[in-house]
Image (tube, rainbow, N blue to C red; front, side, top):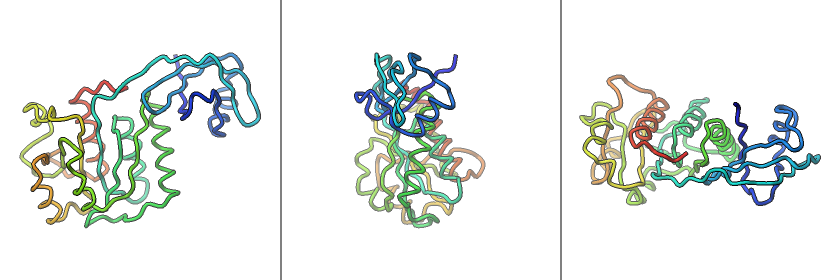
Length: 244
């Protein structure tokens, strides 16, 4: 049976006032007064509510009941370079479905895209909400501000372990998992380089950090968006995260 779920930031208001959601509930799904719908707050809680009234600019709700509450076991951050065309859309969509906790857009030395307009940021946020709603997640991943790579290095101690996707590395993610290295902490950063690859300076800075491990994802050359999605999915699967 289909389960219609909608992201509502403030459940306590007992209303839905997002025009796009109102249109979908009333005109697309043709929900009626007294019918149940499911809501999630993006912070780990899912609710069941009944439609009380349809107004011109809002839907009023009643009998809101908490049906599920989860706490994340791990925090999975993805640091990556924004890409041209719709390839960045693909990363935000699929990495959300696979369980990433936050996105960290980075400007590497060899990055092609070096700016993030506010309109584009809102576009990415909409993709994330849609992906979380569709996939059954209860958490909405955050998008951090676009940062230069050196800024990330200054904050690197926040993460317990950092996995860097690097072709020809002698280690795989599975090797690290078997050696229990992924058990070192709950805050994990996954780094994927730009289309032009990491610079020698960036690699030198990463190699100087004890909590950094370079991992080889494939015997083939992967595009940046493929590497990002594959790394998130692989680590999330190996950790068997019971987040949502």
